[in-house]
Amino acid sequence: MIDDKKILFSGMQATGNLTLGNYIGALKNWLTLQDEYETFYSVVDLHSITVRQDPAELRSRARKLLTLYIAAGLDPEKNCIYYQSHVSGHAELAWILNCFTYMGELQRMTQFKDKSAKHADNINAGLFTYPVLMAADILLYQTDVVPVGKDQLQHLEITRDIAQRFNSIYGDVFTIPEPYIGKTGAKIMSLQDPEKKMSKSDENPNASIYLMDDKDTIIRKFKRAVTDSEANIAYNDTQPGIHNLIDIYSACTGKTADEVVSEFAGRGYGEFKLAVGEAVADLLGPLQARFFDLEKDKAYIDGVIKNNAEKADYYAQKTLRKVKKKVGFPEKIR
Ligand code: ATP
Ligand code: LTN
Image 1 (cartoon, rainbow, N blue to C red):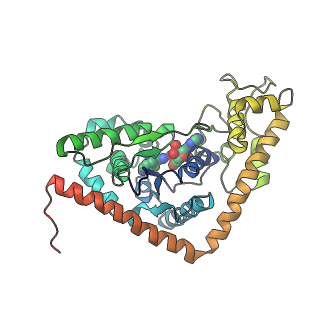
Image 2: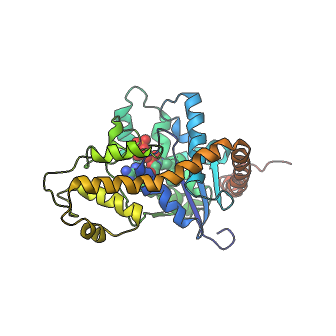
């Protein structure tokens, strides 16, 4: 608890351009939680180098992502928005937790299996211990809740296991975190293959709506979205393309799936796709405008980066001091 509020931690990697899936599945939920919780939203750049990165590009994407957090509506006075690499406690705690994590546990992680298949030429130890760093991110702040997409639940489970293992040896050191999955739009699917999730690393640009796409591009991508030949706007699993468009439309407008179905009853797919495209463009337009304004205000963004790194470091050190003492490291002489 910080000031009687429960603690929330989440983070995103600055790899690739954020998609509508990232916005609906993650960022949008974050906005609704910022008043209720004491929040830490990190740009997890330490995680990014598990896959080879171009240095200049990583730096620029990380800054863009941090700016986007603010443009999306996270108030940096209320939310601790910072770079993971600016708080050394993440890497320190990750090392310690590595010594409380079993190879067998890490071998079971599906993300590791997927990513090592994808990057067969660079299966590095960091990719393997990625979940331990993620556990450190979360446990460092005595986090109560972690908003994540379904794909990250396995990592949250291992975080809880590591924390419980540590606590059972040393007493109550870590808070055991709970996942938080948003009610709507938990999984937005690819516009080109509605059986696959929309993902920023998809090679086909028409499969994803990027948060920085302009209105014409958005409308064109929805026009081309893969649907079916039923010619009936219904919300069921046999029409995954239409199902996905309904999910997107409801996430943008706040209407329920049933309301969307009755609104478009008897109307054609073309008309529906256009309405979805317009709803998405209306949602993203103001966000993009804020982003471009913020990006120009270098001093403001620099201030956010500095102040919030200090704040995060303060809480990180609190936990680290406790952990170091418990495991038996000698106290620093000041
Ligand atoms: P990559 O393609 O690089 O794996 P990604 O687009 O899947 O990236 P992540 O960086 O893994 O995105 O995820 C950031 C956050 O966005 C996570 O909380 C994740 O669950 C959420 N998220 C990603 N894609 C979707 C999606 N299609 N629908 C809903 N949530 C999503
Ligand atoms: N693994 C996550 C990103 C991430 C994260 C975290 C999310 C790193 N550390 C801590 C929540 C809490 C991903 O790839 N989406």
